Image (cartoon, rainbow, N blue to C red; front, side, top):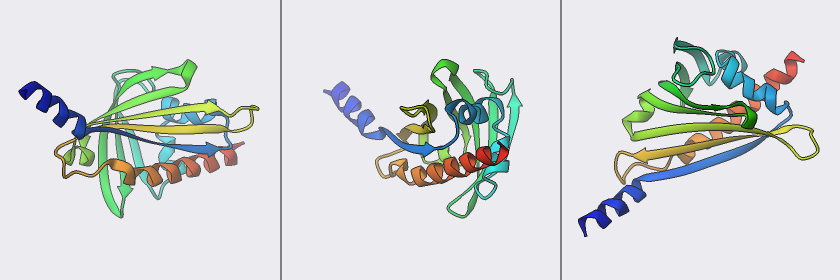
Length: 164
């Protein structure tokens, strides 16, 4: 009986949310921003991301540690993330938050970005998938992050198009 209750409690604290954003940039180009040059995110969306610094490893490699300074809901925030997965053929990268403001309310927080070319080959879809474990049942699901991520994606897309 105790085991079943533990599993039920675990499932109520774990969750997933995602948002898909249509972009005009080629999938490879958008993906490369997060794998090869995430420090450029701050240039593309300076109202949201102030800095992205590589603390350990190399850009785009599993185990590397990246530190993000960003503004969310009008407040300065920090997130230190470890790259967990890189799949170039799928244009997918996964970050695990290992320190920072998000972990004040979530025990675990994973961010997956996957970019796919639209059918017909014109434009792409950037998909943000958040997996999380809340500290307790009073913590809201992180759906409020999704508009922030969508706006950031559109700003990065505009930046990439302006570089062409």
